[in-house]
Image (cartoon, rainbow, N blue to C red; front, side, top):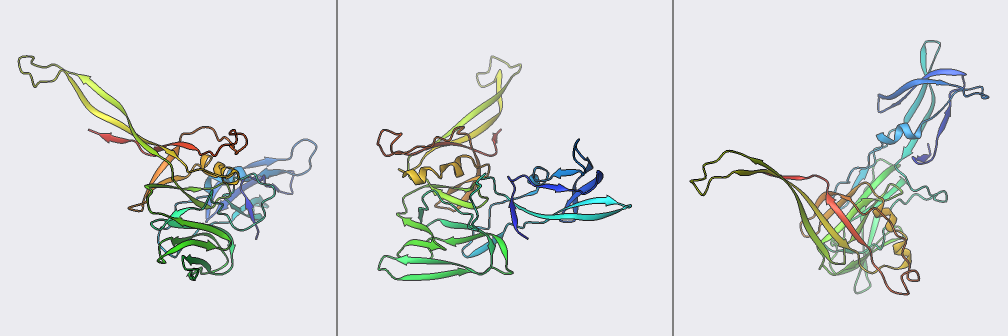
Length: 318
């Protein structure tokens, strides 16, 4: 059964003028209702993609060398009641594609901005309709190559492979099915891992400057105190809510790379990776515009992007 991008409207014809219907997935009913034919139409129809969208999950894959994490997609069964029993009208396989790209017909869901990684990072590569194992070809500085493979079983499946960028000594590039990941010097602190518009996982190495900020909301109460003792308090700061944020700058980008920045800026699922410890922290991007920069519209100058992100959970200090 072909996968359908969740952004595309999917209308199911119930083939009756009115019908009680339900949508089930994974053995559970996620929606039930009654549909009636619109004026001028003879059969009732239901648009189901909006109903199903909340039940597509694209969690952070397992970050371990040569592992595969399936998307775990479950078919959505649209059923109607007829003659006192339920029957299947149509089964639908959606996937988490919000690209609104009418021309996209491929299976590779990763579309990295520039592909750059350090040897301390992990490479995430997503694909649908995987029919065989996924291999990564590591090119060394002497021109020789080493191929490393992630086993996919059973097939076909849809999901994300993880490869350790530094698994092969002296490698300077990794190629996975025609997608290239240059390995650069290990002198960077942060990378961003995110779900792109096609529903695949990508990463962006933060090559520019970064600044970390704590914003505090202080909760203070007044109380009775003895002013004859200098250490007594009339005001007590009993708790602080700390919002941690970072301002990050990318490296210089080409026009084509800048054209892929929307994958990151528009993403609702982003993690900040502390490269040295391979720690992944959930964050939200608070930058509210995505400017499509080019060399020409920036005055014939090279350019970069600045992003502001916040920790996805406020911290409490008591």
